[in-house]
Amino acid sequence: MSVADPWKSIQLVQGDITRQDVDAIVNAANSTLLGGGGVDGAIHRAAGPELLEACRKLGGCDTGSAKITPGFKLPAEYVIHAVGPRYRDGQHGEAQALASCYGKAIELAEAHQCKTVAFSAISCGVYGYPIESAARVSMRAVADALSRHEYPNQVRWVLFNDEIYGVFAAVLKELEGGGL
Image (cartoon, rainbow, N blue to C red; front, side, top):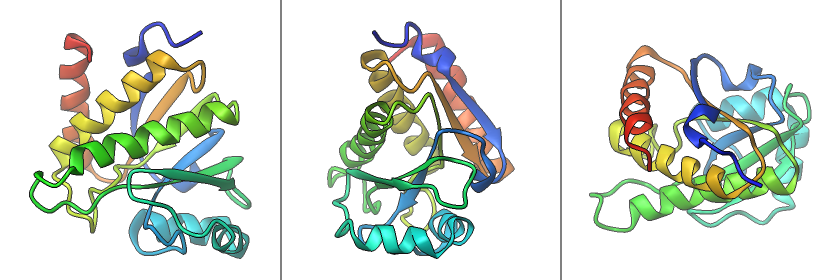
């Protein structure tokens, strides 16, 4: 069983991903999984030192993939650590790697029966992925994954400022009308 209309399962909010009451939040992680700046650092701080210890045991994560840990002190039961690509010029497999990390995150959410998942804008911070392109790639990847999986049945992008929210909202409106 899969989500009938994946676009109806996607929502956007502006806010703090560490405060989302969902089954899993998806961390825009680096390949070491040992914390960093931006969203990654905020999630590690909010979850507490146990998250770092759990991540140490995972042995890192390849770009385009994802791994899962408990959420510890977060409202979410799980943290899915998805490693997006560093953007170079769009000619080095960046879109495929970005789509892959979102798809792997959905697979982990399903494996752990997470009904609700919150994403950040993976690779859009220090990794330099252009926001509009990232929104398009990530939403298509998630909609495609939702059409093939039973869980999650709600996906929320939690975007931290007006600019990113506006770009994601415009792309979502466009894609909802045209499908995948």
